[in-house]
Image 1 (tube, rainbow over the protein chains, first blue to last red):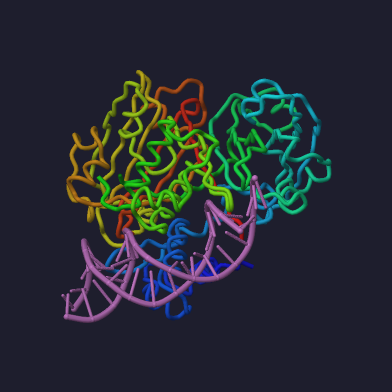
Image 2: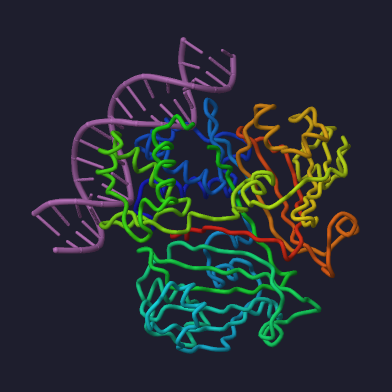
Length: 239
Length: 239
DNA sequence: GAGTGGTCTAGACCACCAT
DNA sequence: TGGTGGTCTAGACCACTCG
């Protein structure tokens, strides 16, 4: 799959950690040993280990070694940049997507601002609800730059937009800026979501970028309060 | 401050990006040019650039260059691992902390589990509310392993716990596992927080670790819905 | 074809931890 | 004192973009 040495080593070590081949709290073999075992230079091992460290698999301690953590196994990883389909498939629950709207619009000033377009670019507007175990707990409103994604179908929106973009359009989704807040419910929420007596929803606003730093998508993802969960691994910055 | 070359270069470049010395959307000088300008090897430049990339300052594009993003300037960075005092000082608002409880307890089974202690270790319990612009919008409940932090005073808890731990105890806070959810309010919330008609609060549960991978703190941070905000920069994992 | 970033190497020196 | 991770180097080759 991965053609890089350090990525293959990362994948190998992360799997071994997940499968408890290395005990939690114990140390990995030293960098020099790993370099010999994998037949690569120490710097290549270090790249793999740094990646493990960033993703919460290990903690490197100078003079001692790389301690295995148990933080690498998030059962519901909303952290990162993952499509609903990818999350849903892993969750083991029954889920589906209902497309309420798929139109090509002239965007409002707010959407223009969020998508950073000034001229007369058209924008795909998609409204979808996500049904998990019989309840509609998420309402997604997507706005997508039509210059970048020229065509879209209802079937694509029902399946996986990200899969379509990456596999069929041959584009690479790369990074996002996300903002979480809790906002009052709207009429749209009442219509499309299975709300209880809630007066608020968790709103995640994302600007999503491609490989080449082009902004192609702005999304408002509205989650029912009791179904929202987000797990994060954070490292402290010491300046 | 930083003694590493790559960290000094990272700090220099990030400041220049924040001060618009490099235009958003334009490219940084090439890695070879930067290596010559800073008088270091290219690999050292690449370490600094990778750090910039991780923190959302730039996007590297093969064959073209490193494009400057405008995602690096979060006005309210709850993302990461930052103490309340550090966030509050940057926000420019008036704020204070009120310590309601500081006791040494024998922990419940739940707290033992969260702090991963099995024997008869004592635990500091701290209950603090955070007042911002006259309203109590956050309630923090901290549990701290007394084996690691032997002494604590009310004054320390009112000022900055993290500053005390890092500067006076000479320990290094390193990483955390955080879990966000929205939970129903408790009696404690009603007593200590300035709630409106809210029936829920945002709860952030954190396990915080030191440099040497020791878990020293478990925290439940309860935020009023309308005052909670979290900004994240996420990169997509491609396997 | 010239320039860019991506990967990898072999070797060096350092700071830290254990014993 | 020997082993660990942390930093840095000089050089090599590759894949990609652009004119």
